[in-house]
Length: 352
Image 1: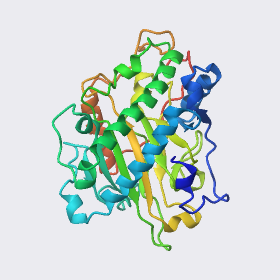
Image 2: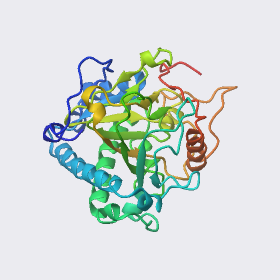
Image 3: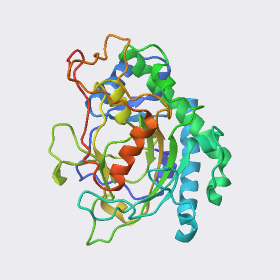
Image 4: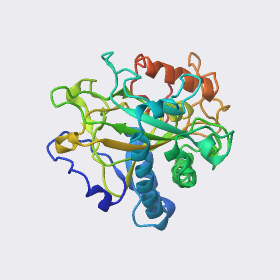
């Protein structure tokens, strides 16, 4: 998350709520090629699909943290606009994943409306990979900042992907080549806001789901994100809060990585509920860099190495490109019929 000074502006995360124990991976050590840190990263992505990424202690990480704080200010500015103004830029599923989503536009598992809003800023728009889109003033006035943020976020993701290439016995650059920053994709920076909920009616804001894309790099300051640990039933008492940590991002893998790795990597069920303790009375902002595959790439499992198993008789592969695959998943989530479950984490060397 952003720096300690930024955290100090908000109520503390309480110490009496069920909390997930996520491994903390040091970005500086990954940059140095530290093998123990690399193995810890791979193990985390097989076991839970989540980890904390500590960005402190190196110039690349510190610069990125400071820029994240600037993007949080853009997040607040965009959501301070009148609803009428924001609705001029409403997104249109399944045609487009970019633009504004108002609170209540999707449903949670019970069929009740969600309790969050977001503005999805497309990477192709900010980097000039396609024609520019119309955006409200807080986005248009900060194009250079958002472009810089996306470039830095992608450089972090590329480091992560390079380590996964090695452990999956893929040629260097394989995973990055499926999601290059210079090609059309659904990759975006999502600026989210969760308003405080009524004290007598606090519930899930965003339904349990797995991410559509490949990698999510998330910053938030207040709690609310929860994950369902492996092996536990999907009941309220089993969900665990993820405690935001100063100087750290939350990294998670999405369904695309499960498909490409034939289930070796894990995409874990997660949701957003009300923030714990005194934090529940404060608007909750999040900044998520959502990496999606290049629009035209295949979602079939990767081959060529000795780790990812070949397709066996009776197995089914995903025979569609990333664009169609993402549209199907996004539509299911919008209608509340995603039926998501954690996937992946298979043992290496075990056939499906």
